[in-house]
Image 1 (cartoon, rainbow, N blue to C red):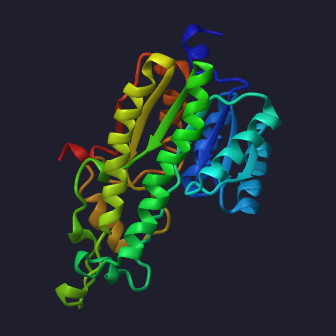
Image 2 (image 1 turned 90 degrees about the vertical axis):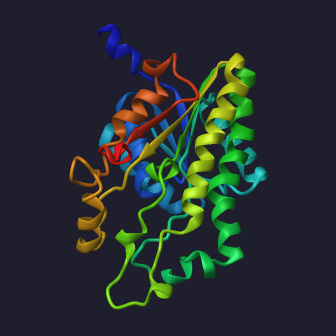
Length: 275
């Protein structure tokens, strides 16, 4: 095996992926299993996490596990870490992927407008997407620092780097005050993850833990055609991402191929943030 190939090899290393039962959580797990890693799909939806871990094992022939994790609870984080260590005897990396992301076609999304955005919704979104990443980094990251090695990858977004273009969410026939928008919490959470990445990178650097952020663009997943057309008009490559197109980025960030990289923000968005 060439030196280049071995730098991407994470055989036997164990990675916890929060929100692991979701669309990209599964893809991150597949990415790691493809290069020998053992993905732990951690999610409040335990049965779905287990089903998708089984699917990874069938597809790759490797090992995977679904565990229950509520990222808003330190106790749940500690319990999940204990389960991972009891099952595999090691823990090597964390992917903070859990988030709430209401779809633009959801009924009642006009309530996402800033004027009407509920404090309850603000608190709920930040609790999962940002406070959750803090708590998992506190529990799992502290373990990595104590052992003197490991990686953390925070899944941010292109909308953590640029503001959403609210025009792409507009629906014909609705007055301005009722037009749906991308909620304020999405950008706040994703932008917060970028800065959490930089903070953790400098905090853990001397203890062997690397922390980076991945800022993906939108993934094609059955969205309405008119919305897709408006969004892709903002992307130089002229299309949304396929669901498996972030696997290479995850493999890079979680492996020794990125051994001299920490505190960085990797934007993989078809060029959208260039404009």
